[in-house]
Length: 221
Ligand code: FES
Image (tube, rainbow, N blue to C red; front, side, top):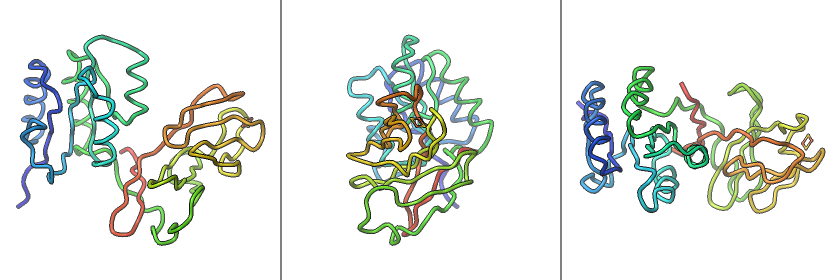
């Protein structure tokens, strides 16, 4: 029999720790402090203090290390910019510290403690040695998406320009920035951030995980 899923506490805030332990108990999760956890253990859920020094670096690091973990971040004060930045850096859920437990409880009540289900995209061997757009997927999520191979990683994002709908993957990609072939809007394919108009919004990004020679898309349940 396997052990119960792990909730990793990357926070020292006593109020949050107590609340997270209560929620974990309700959902059959084992809690551990980040400094007490075995680094080989893969957490199902991570609770992260976004006000701690270096929290955003930690977030990017743990997002890369455990792409399937559900990451819940907490902030001491409502701050819209930090909130959005945390979501962009990979937080699945952001809440003020007093509201974290309720938000986490709601999320866990909606399904298994995980980030989403895996949908196979392609065999990694098919993309070996290729950089740029390596895959287009017309229908796994509600919008077409493109997968870019940039440096060492794969990044999946929406393949429709928010300005007038052009397929972004037909534009040029340079250093992780794609330029819309129609009117020149630019987006960072690793974060979805809009870097240049006329488009006035970011594009959606989707988490991926590679396992057993295959790249999977993590589709939220
Ligand atoms: S359609 Fe992309 S910039 Fe206009």
